[in-house]
Each structure stands twice: as C-alpha cells, then as structure tokens.
Image (cartoon, rainbow, N blue to C red; front, side, top):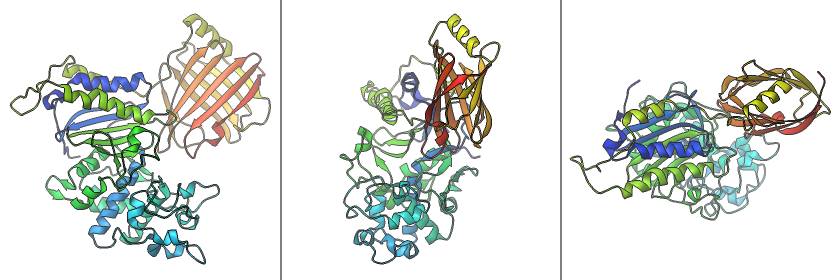
Length: 497
C-alpha cells in the first residue's frame, strides 16, 4: 500500500504531545470505549493510536458516515450530467410509488431537499413496525410536511439516494465510488457496504472500512476533491456540501448537533465540519487550525458520549492552540515546550487496548470467596422468559483470571468466556460476530459481564448476575439497534447443583 501521507512529530507542527495525551486520557478516564484516534495537521499525520484488537487496517462499522459517501456519489452524478439538485425523486422511482394518487408533498420533494435532511418525513420510514421493503417505505409512508422546510434526520432518505446512484450509474453504489475515486485512494479492497432485507446497499449506515480509509476520503473532501494534483471530486459541489443549508438548532439534542447541516455533512462549532456516524465514528476538520481528527468508538448507550469526544478535542487541543505563545520558528510554527517526550507519546499510543470492566469493587479475599462460592454451580430458569434461557452454569478457573458462562437458550447450547482485568476475544453464541468479554465482581452478590461486539454489528451486551442463594436473578441488556433481541430482559433461576 502506498503511504500517501507524510508523518511528523506533533510538536513540529505546533501541538504539544501533552495536549494529545490529555485528550486521549480524558476519554479513557470517562470510560468512553475508543477504538482509534488519528490526528493530521498541515497535511501530515501526527498521531495514530489503535485500541487492540483494532489495528490500522481493521474494518470498522462507520454507520452514518456512509451518508457523506452517498453525498459524494450524488455530486459525481451531477458532474456527469445525469442528475440535478432540483430533480424530483419520484421521477426516478415510478415502480415504487403508491397506487392511485401520489401525495403532493412526495411529488414536490427534490434531491436537494433529501441531501439537506428536509424530506417530507419526520422519521426514518423503514424503522416502522413490519417494514421489509426499506426503499418502498420511503414512497408509501404518508408524508407529514412540505419538503424543503423542516430538518428531520431521515436515514431512509439517504438510503433512497444511495439506490438512486445505483439506478443512474448501473453499478453497485460502492463499486461506483470505487471506480470514480476510491481506487485512486487505495481504499481497502476488503471494505464493503451492508445490504438491507431486499439486498440493496445500506447507503444510510452500512459502510465498513478502516480508520485510514476514512482519513483518506476526508482529506480529499478537505482539499475540495484534489488528490495530490488529481481532481477526483467536483470542487464546487464539495464546497456546497460542507456549507450550512439546514438550521437544526431546535431539532438536535447536543450542542455539536445544533451547528447546522449541509449535504449529508454536519457543521460543527469552531467553524468546522464533519462526517458523523453513530457511536463516535467521526471525521472532523477545523479550518483555522488546519487540523483533522478521526475517531472510531462505541459510545452507544453513553448519553452525551459523542459530545464528550468533541468537548475533549476542543478543550484539550483546539482551544489550547490559541493560548500558545505567539513565538514562531523558521517554518512559521509555534515553538513548543513539552512535558511529554516523543517516545512517551509513541509508547502510549501503541499500548492502547479495548476498554475492560473495572477491577473488582470489593476486597480481594471477599472477591475470591464469592467466586469460589459460585464456581461450578448450575441453575435452571424458574419460568419461561424473554431471554429464552433454560439453564446455565458458571465456571471460574483456578487463578481466577477467567470465567465461563455456559447456557442453554432457545437457539442451542453456548459458552461465553470472560476475563477478569482483561478481554477475551471470541465468536459470540450463534452469531457470526466477534466479541470481547470482561467481567467484574461488583459486590459480594453481583457479577457483571460486559460483552463488546467488535464486528460489522457494533454494540454492547451486559449480563448482571445477582445472587441470593439459592436464587439468582439475571439482567441481560443489549445496546444495539437490530440484533440480540434475546439478550434483553430479566429472569430468575434457582440452584440445582
């Protein structure tokens, strides 16, 4: 793979190592599960850290970052003359229109309205109960308002635009982007986009690629489509796409989501703009500091988690750059006096690991007594339950560094291994998905297990085992949109062995 980006020490480009260290540590101290952090300034890569088992080349679910990729595809079709912003979406999908009279709001809706998140719907139509035809739902769901007026985050709108790209290009959405510009960037050949129930590309949230892939595409956007002298994307369209077209102040829940919206790009405070995917998938650019931040994470279930990434970035790095002494070196950059050496920062960056459960919350002897007490004991569920669990047992190894939750549910017999003070990577149950599992003894009657899903599905599952001999109540909670329904509920069981 070609190394397109030159590397430099952060302080050579005016950023003290301690700023970067403090930014990263702040996120970890707040127990925000980070998966990667990359920083670029003045076109040079100054920091990259990947939280094992994630690496530079690991594919990661990017969620709504995919929307920005769809926007770039629309811009390319406009450049080819196959589309205009003022075209009406109904003209391209006559086969999906409802029978009889088409609602006037639907007929009014343009490509521009959809890019600006100003469709005629107030929600994502395919999330309604019983929907299997995601594309069709966009045209058959009754509109709520005149398009082009109200900002409402509608993923079904972007999903439809992604399929429009396929209809007009005659290619798979992602293949079209590969042919037009991704291959030039040496975008990962393993990268892919998930499909919906009818096998159509999920343009709203389906992209799986590496952090480096995301940096490359965002670098291209920052440079208005110019890739080292080759104009791969239309400059005028990108300038329009990253501008503010929708005021979302009254609609959004966090400060950064209130800064405005372009064509599937978010505006940010500090005069910046971003690609943003659920859970902390971010590509952020601050023009007056000429700095790019790339993150991947899993902040799902952490209210305000993405805002925490932004706040930490602003307060630990961006805002502090204004406070540096205005003393320039020969390259016009601030001289930096740093308490953290380059070697310390590099060692820190290379030592990051996926978050684990906190150490046991009780004294070591009490923890050992508790684990001995529950070791190799079997339980049967007292009643039928939403988790479909019938029976289970717990095994703890001799040095109490690992354990195993063996269980039977409606889908079969499974074992979940977990570590104390470490994660154990494994395939999860009857799902072809990798997970990392760790556990902690929270009290003399409570064992918590955290399961982090680190695959094309991204999320968390928690098992809280509350013991009251001879009974145990198990709380299972899943934090993920569409999967693991049987791991979300509470039931009680009784000791049988």
